[in-house]
Image 1 (spheres, helix red, strand yellow):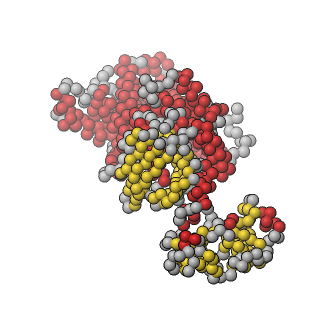
Image 2 (tube, helix red, strand yellow):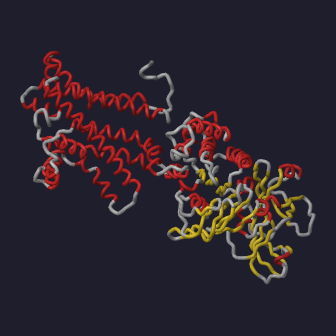
Image 3 (cartoon, chains in turn red, green):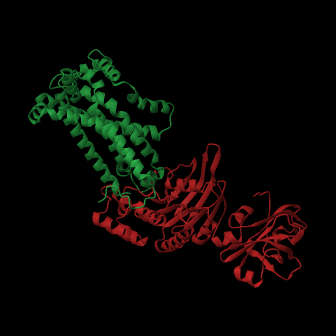
Length: 357
Length: 277
């Protein structure tokens, strides 16, 4: 097992950052800790690295209890959100740092260090910048160097704290794919923290959704996205329309409409429910194809690149419904503001309980 | 090379005005007054000038002034760094009180400091008594001068390092630790290079101040010819004897040495900074 966390609890004055968290990460796995800011995900990462001590619980890295070891003895690679490169050192010296501070007996020879640094910089495609200073590099380039620096000491685990969040959208996406590829090559057990669900879904082998210091759900991106266990997870994984209503006699109320309740909720007694629909799972057409379709008016059209966003005012609904449709469909249907359309809610997800957004 | 590159467009406006203003003020405040030393020396002629500034007593005073100022600056660099570290890194009761104490040597008339030291370190004073037991003489000795200069130069080092230290992100140190560096290695290889320019500036200021310091030193040094006479005192004693030319001759050499040392230190700093920008 790469990383075993057992019952980690951490309290700060006034609130509990982590509440009894247990988590296993297999060797070579790439796991995302996903959650809103302040949910404790970064604290968890820092605890694994030894930069913070848990109030209780155990951290076992590669079958060795490292709970009370200082960071320098843990042999973890840590990549910071804002790179944390050493400004006064060149790229080469930055990457070589971890090797040069080794005790005399374990330190590789000068030529071995040179070779290793060059190899790592090639791996992160930064070998051309070996003599530069961090200030001469762009954000994305700096983060690559930071990654090479973290990998230089052959860490047992690699921890990345929102590694791409300080970069602009284009670079972020590029680096994300590149990191996935790199991980497939070097297979170091990795955990990265993010609040960007897209990043987690695209990059991770498994996703751990965290909220208020607790794990809400754990699974592959597919599982988490298709079968969210609760309203929080569903809501956090993408844009949603929420309909507050009641569930009664196997039917769910949506505004003035009624839908069949999902099987597992068919026989529950009457109680409040929330129904969720993702904007891209809403069907739009000119003709009524189904009895349950809603009649609506287009209130607003937003250009979103490949997708077109629509705000729809529907009879019997208090708030406008947000939909996203492909550009082609938008052009084919010749839609514009004020047009009447029919709206079909295809994949409504219903949760009961008092979750509030 | 053009001196004022007027042709090139600069985003920052007002170069001409601000440059003129700077030159004017530096002239009015520094260059013109100091040039008087030069003009006062000229009537003397070359031979008497050399004779005056190479007199054994004068040479001894230069040696003493520069060596004591240097020792004091080095000591201040170390202690000042520690103090700045404590003030920046830790939060404790009375921190602000300590912080205010640092500036006190700036505010105090130097003569007052000198009298305090003289009382404290005299063979019957609180500390002097203890040192006397170990046969260490502080008063009437170069050691005493160094003690006074340490006091005078201390705030310069603390106040220049403090803001730089405050800027160092915690993450930098955490990164070093995650990479296996010990506390000492983190300090030696990461923090110290980062602080070095500020440390150099601070100790240069302390050093410069130490060379010129007069008030506090004369009370503690005992002013024994060839032993504990500092260069500013030589100037004063020549003035007392109405030897104005001699005084300016001594001052001129002091000025030239100081200026070239400051220039050198600035060059070192410039060279230090260059690469990272």
